[in-house]
Amino acid sequence: MATSVLFDAPGPKAKTRNAILAVVTVLVVLGIIAFVVVQLGKSGQFDSKKWSIFTYPLVQKSFATAALATLKAFGVAAVLSLVLGFLLALGRLSDHAWLRGPVTWIVELFRAVPLLVLMMLFYYGLPTVGFKLTPFTAVVVSLTLYNGSVLSEVFRAGVNALPKGQKEAGFAVGLRKGQVMTSILLPQAVKAMLPAIIAQLVVILKDTAIGFVITYQELLYYVKYLGSQVNFGNPIIPGAMVGAVIYIGMCLVLSGIAKYAEHKINKSPAIAKAQENLAVGVAGDETAGGLPPGV
Amino acid sequence: MNTLLDNLDIFTKGFGNTLILFAWSAVGALILGTVVAAMRVSPVPIMRGVGTVYVNTVRNTPLTLVMMFFALGYPQLGLPKLDYIPLAIIALILYTATYVAETLRSGINTVPLGQAEAARAIGLTFGQSLSQIILPQAFRAVVPPLFNVLIALLKNTTIAAAFSVLEAGAIRAYLSERGEPALVVLLWVALVFVILVLILSAIQRSFEKKWRNA
Image 1 (tube, rainbow over the protein chains, first blue to last red):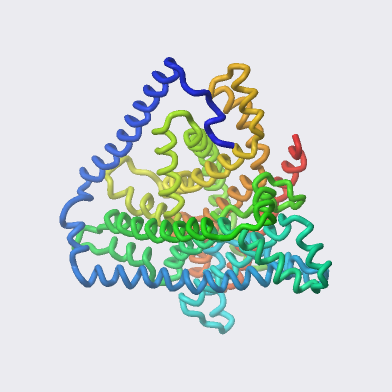
Image 2: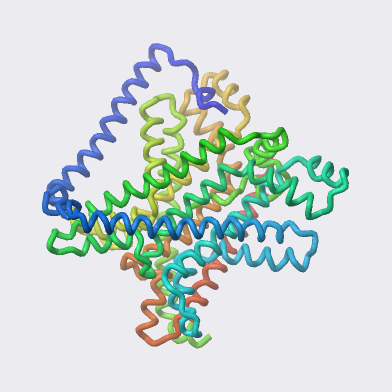
């Protein structure tokens, strides 16, 4: 529904009212921004001492290294999550109860445990029984298990939202069960769910930041480290600002790629139908309309 | 079992704080999220712009970084001193509200066109049609995804542990001082979270059943 259906074309009275509301909004937003900026200025957050740290080549290089560490964890975890999500989705869609049951439990389990707890389990918990993981491995394994489970639900919802005829036609031309799934249903499901899949990838990118808790030296870890530099007046706020710009930039690039792919992708009528089903949540499946939110 | 029973004080304190964080942030995020969603469909272009910029900025920032702003940055600003728990709640509200707003907005889009048209036809204003016709129906359509947002919020509260809040995520650090095995402690923490999520899912299902096709 286009938002414009919610209100009529404004008449003279509504135009005045909207103009007043616009001015009030601008004033409120400017007020909040001004308050924050003034407070930041008053407490010396814009002092050159705090920002001079960014002029050192070493700091700039370390920022780049930290951002690369973030990207490395993201890249490996993203690929592995997609693979795991694919496998788990196959398991949950299986006709065999002995496979479907345990896989369902695994998916539900890893979706229920907070990522931070998962990371700590791998990094602090496993060494007590003799498995020592590096922070990088712990971050990647946790991200993969959590996001793989979420992605498997996304794939499953996509498959369930496809029109029935796709599956039936596959069987009718003599394909076997596995073939129907891998060459007919899943490819279309992936295309239909592309926005949700990319949203989940953005989540993986953001969640790498939790890795700093288990001493993985990524962007946030470095920001916190900068914040502890007493010589530069503990520039935690300048550091966090720079970090936020880098994170937002990376996520926007990822979302941009998603929009481009969504635009380029060739949509069959079945895919369009599936997306429609998902949008209104009538696919007769409990996950439809109730997709994992990518938080 | 002993690990749990011997340290019940820390476990109850930790999960108690988790629930406090969750409850306040949930209420705050639902209110702020609804306001932002309303802004994003409002007739005033500037309001829509403000809502869009807010949602897109915060959604692309890690919660960990938002919380760092508040937990480590706020005390440097020389404003009235706040405890770590309210600071964590503010960060959680600001972050989760964006997801609530997006969920509601997608719900508003599922309400049949005729509803909005009928509301306009009988002369309701934007505020009236949104609050009395559209949003009540949108809320019902988005109960499942909204609960998913709340479940995510419950799990996200653990991030506050990284910023000096004694809650579930911090139990391990406290108990390692008492010499408890980290693996057992963390498995207990994970188990309690699974139970909490199961409870939320059960509530989600009952709401879904009650309001289906309403």
